[in-house]
Length: 444
Image (tube, rainbow, N blue to C red):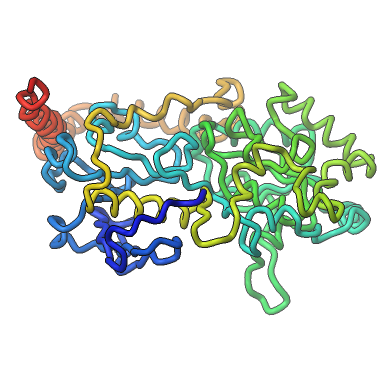
């Protein structure tokens, strides 16, 4: 997207204040935004002493807490005098599900395509760091080499996963899938393979782990519109067919409709496994999913073999003033807004507020009760045994335990409950007072 280049403020540097840290680090201190093709620049800081000099504040959703009172004057947002931007690249957190909280923010910086400042997980343009460059990258292994790896014991599917706490309960689905097809799993959930090493003994990077496989489970931890992470880029870059599950609409993020396998097209783990078995035995059918990596010279120029939504999202150009839907593009748009507010070119709309932004999410997609019992069967058996033992002890020593519980409640639990209730009340009171102070303005 090409930006207009107003001459007002040429040569100036406009401050942007990160009110919160980034994961408890002052990550953006001194970051200069001077790569946008604009006649002015912006500089990010975590130094709150410049509060009066900036027109833009950024809050990281993961560490933002309104109830503590560690916020700027709320009337500066609700009036509004300054832009309050909520930044998040993760699926919605609890504060993003509460319209009472989100209503204090004027802008959203997120992966969501309808956000004010869009930042997908992938870079636009066509340079070496772009998503399109990953699409054009030749497969790391030929089909013949992959078939040889299969004969040597490699599973047809790989999965790298960091935890067993996904809101989508994807781990339930994968546990069922394992009943019908082999999956090599690396990480901290259902792991059945050791992480590979390089010849020098160091850990292989994730791309190297994925590369020799035919298929890769690119399953997001939440099913929300536009929430597509690096899990998709890894297999695409390496020439591995991704098996995808995330948002309903993947067209802006996959090269074309024949470049990925969507779990929703199958209905059950058994049917998906049957289809993967068929592709594993049919080299011609399998290679059809990688045709996009062998474009003609004309297709390389025009991208005509790629989906129109994908091209629209990522073929943004490489000139400084052609901003993509990535981190740099979002920063450029924020810098432009900061300049326009500072110079009075634009003003903030008091009615432009964030809604509760979890409405596109399915937080329990694979939360099948029977699958859950199957997944946690061992833990359930251990828990039942422990509960039986504890019950027997409670019956035998009930007077002693009653005394201990009473002491614990009096000394620890009761004060904690009072503190939590007080913090919640402070949050509501702070918002109510700020909003009430604006009523005379709204009646003018």
